Image 1 (cartoon, rainbow, N blue to C red):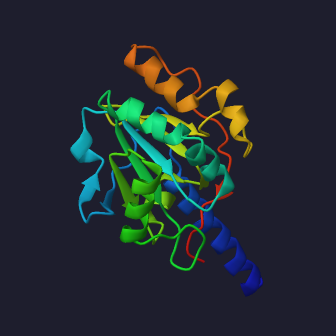
Image 2: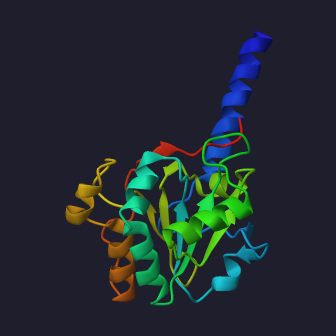
Amino acid sequence: MNRRIVRAVLASVVGLVAATAWAVQPGNPAPDFNAQDTHGQTHSLAQYKGKYVVLEWHNRQCPYTQKHYSSGNMQSLQREWTAKGVVWFTVISSAPGQQGFMTADQENAFVEKVNASPTAVLLDPTGQLGHLYGAKSTPHMFVISPEGVLLYDGAIDDKPTTDTSDIATAHNYVSAALQESMAGKPVSTPATRPYGCSVKYAR
């Protein structure tokens, strides 16, 4: 067999194995992680066992992210659920030089300016955390149970637009997943297709 073809086949197999390794399926254990926040503190999923955890992929320059922050919708969700004991991590996986990349000081200033209320903002410039969860867009949302099981993976809601007027009539998948699980019910919609800007990983 031609060596070029062999190399191509092997590359495809390696890529498939890597994609499978990174795939996170609702109903399965969520991968543990270690990531540093904008204040220099390291967080792991394991240390929050016994609590619900939300991961929100973020790029403040993305119009889809701007939709939920300029309207105050994301901040409202953060305040609502953290008040109920949920750990909410905003995650920035934009690489240096890519759209959405922020230093710790820049992001802290943004959080203060828009009155955001996540538990912490995790900086992921290498994309390690983003690839671990297969985060594709901003926003891309994940909900994890107190037992460490992935409950939801997908879009924030069912209105994949940049129009803030759509928020009032949107079905919020994140809130629905948390409400159902906290009530002892199975999550009725455990996965949807995320919408937004692509995560700006290192190239």
